[in-house]
Amino acid sequence: MKNTYLPETKSDNIFAFVGDADTLILIAYGVIFVVLISMIILMIRKKRKGDK
Image (cartoon, rainbow, N blue to C red; front, side, top):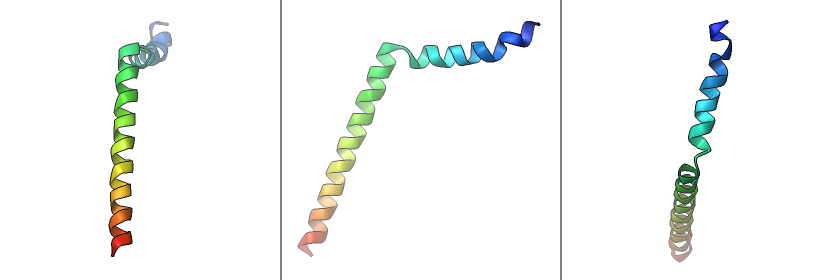
């Protein structure tokens, strides 16, 4: 009977980590930063291919 709730506690720990507001904000800013950098790199590559 002890181990009955073990999987739920593991998932609760994961949700507690992801549910933290500061962590979600940092993850969101990181994703936005990566997307912007990748878009800039793609635009630079397209301009170089167009010039040749």
